[in-house]
Length: 486
Image (tube, rainbow, N blue to C red; front, side, top):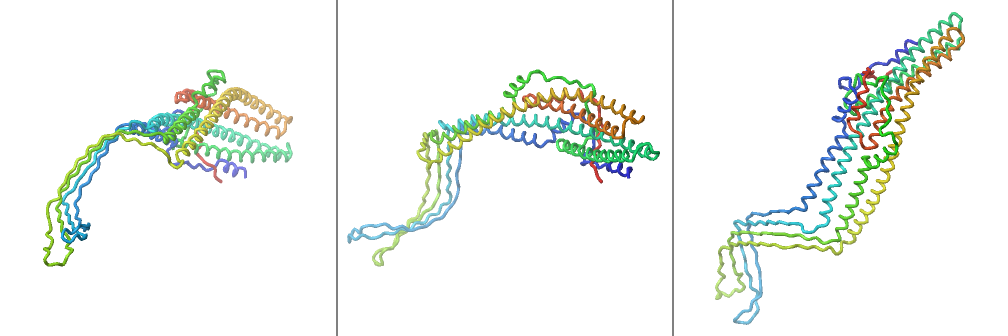
């Protein structure tokens, strides 16, 4: 049963993904994520799209030139009647006329140039485009910094999961040996059956812990693969002598002040306020007149034949029948116009006032969003700063805790050999050592993650900061690219 449990805890290795497993450090993983992460690529595409808003807004203030025309042939016929006085009888009679026209060719064109003289909305739209470009740039930089934070967190989460699994494996092996010793001691009558049962319970618990640790490692690896599209066989971890420096400057309020000015979420919120304020002015322009200078040229040419026939109104044979008149009906025309067009809005059904109120409310919402961003930046900065200090002290304390628990375990095992300590004491000492090793490894990674978070909250995080941390990652660590089964 125990051998089967060990095999169950070991799991069957199943390679995650189709990519070849590789070994990398933090900077190389980040560079892979830059090429692969869809969030950054989306922000970059939005930034490039926003850059086009400036030339589009500027184009409205430049001359607008249009040219249109047509070329066609047609045939038409029709009748028309009009009153006429008979000069002989003085009677008013209706005289009819039939018209048949065959247009062989007709063409015309209209060319127009319009230049804005005064359009308040267009000038404000140009101003708004500047804010849109700056906002897209801020969002792009924020996405880059967020990627650095996500890569760092997931990178060190994998290492923490690997350290946890290693400690769990070591604990399982130790509990396995403890169980074997307890069974042998029980067989010769040195200990009671309860000691064997305690050892068996600890062994089973450690087996479950290994399975959970493998599952956690597989999840952490999958989260890292989501960013990079790669599965890694090894990752570099920090050496034992990694320096634990204080944040520079070593003043919390200085970091907060910097965050309130440079945090990218705050910058984006400020630009949102400016954009909303401009939108109010654009809506208000619906009350203002517009003035345009325009010049227009119209020209047409027509080539046609026409037949006009008077409709016979009398059956008197003495009156000669009407004679059709046929001839050309060609024509051409040219119009040149230049002028100033003024449009003064008077009433639009209340729509303009409604749009102004709508933008005023949105401006109010953007100010509230800015206030929330300022508070969030301050909270995040203070939390990250205190996190660096706390983890720095915690690393030192847990490092000593590992040494102390190792010494305590050795002493407990020695006492067990001479009969002064029980099996429960040994098992508890091993469990405390496992927890100390796990917490110590996690605290080192949390210290590094909080350094990255602090720089990000202050708005100054850059790839050079990852490169600085990467210098301390000098120990390649093989990873178990597996998921538990059973």
